[in-house]
Image (cartoon, rainbow, N blue to C red):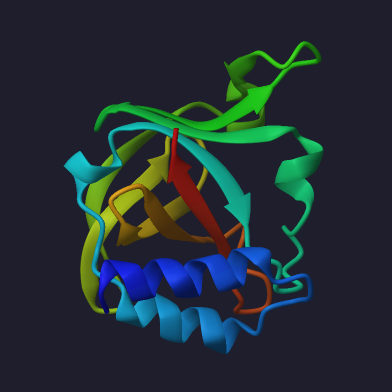
Length: 155
């Protein structure tokens, strides 16, 4: 899928007001190229795709801003906003920080963020040079076999 078409579909999902069927997100995911470790470096603002997953709305309650990938070994997975709008790494909520690896998911090797203190892996695929789609995976976040879908846009 071209970057232009991928971006158009991403925008449709992002602007949708109702719940998105997971099968649509899975089809979209399958059409995207894997993200690279180098391509993930930098600051990202995040958001979620509403599917009815039990995690929907939880990040917003914590005032989640996004993620910062300083290097493969230095990742701030839960950058949140304080009462004054300043960004900080919410180490308590994340149970530590994270690192970035290449990991197989659904038959493809893609950039994956691995939390240091909990069994959670965020797999990424590239929408375009400034946008990635993520699937959160792990014992504590899979909801009756359902994954949590989110996105990051480069700051």
